[in-house]
Image (cartoon, rainbow, N blue to C red; front, side, top):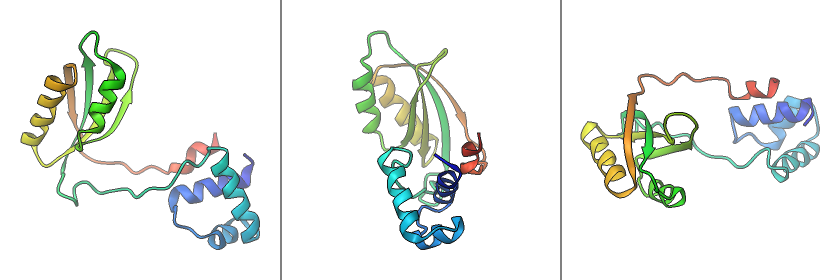
Length: 149
């Protein structure tokens, strides 16, 4: 990736709906050259796709939590992954190092729904221990800044 590719990725991180013409103006290349560069970024796996970002509060899920999970001994990770995929309140999941096995981000309508999620995790998916923290405020960061490293 050269400086222009980094600039294109940064622009697309800010707004994935920019047209090739808009991108081209920003990086001072032709639209065709810009489109070729973006296609190469896709083909190489640098850009894996585009998505909408939901405001979970606006869709009725104002309770946001991060939960660290420790699995029971012998729990199959692949089965656990499939189980997590079936819990719609779990919006992100990570396998982590350290004291816990996984970290999940959850969006719920309230504490009662979250308690239900915890019960399902423990009863059906091999979770032995949970440590949760309430997310108070999202701090937007500039997504393209990693490209400056």
